[in-house]
Length: 305
Image (cartoon, rainbow, N blue to C red; front, top):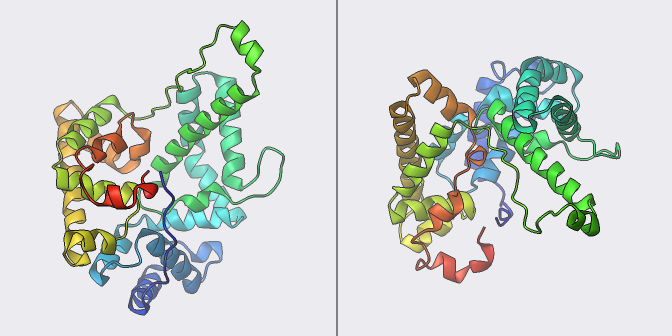
């Protein structure tokens, strides 16, 4: 997937909204216990909003901020900054999730512990040689649960370790062991199969316009302004369409999961915790179906994911 385009500075009015939101939610976000000031929190939120969209309407920005998992975002950033109190809270809250996810993927105790240890290093911001680097927790933006995000990171870390192990195996040794050149990737899905089936069915049922909007915005990281220019409408119209499509898609996926035997509570928890990257669903391929004749994919093919 192409990397997101560089973001322009936020509009002063949007910055004012972010500052107002930060001041109003500073206490309930738990920022004070980690030594963050309201300005520190506002800076984090401005960064997250900028990475999301620097051209959204004021109403869209307010809705976006209101939907963030604010307390979890603050905790993740405090951990990334090396706050010891934050790490105590993090480990008490998520240690079990990390080990359970690692064991479910690795399927063996020692391998699971090795995977979890590798992940801890990535979260702390230390590489295999003990050298400092940016903590992976900085890539959590509060748009879904931190627990679901961690499950995704565990799965990705397993894939990374698997690939590294394959690279370290010599070609002669691989041939002697009868390995195939195109060995399949390990099964790293940590999601309920019913969630995967529901997502696959509902993504396939989207209209061509809906698939285009989702692919352009979420996969290709097009701005609302770019999409609006192509369709000849105001960017606020695109913002409303995206919000409607996303909301309806979530509702339909939830309904399918319940019809497949989940309780409403299980379905709600799955919608909260599972990232789309957890699913063995061809999201990119499905969303791009029927978009080949749309100008975006011809004019800017170099930016396709």
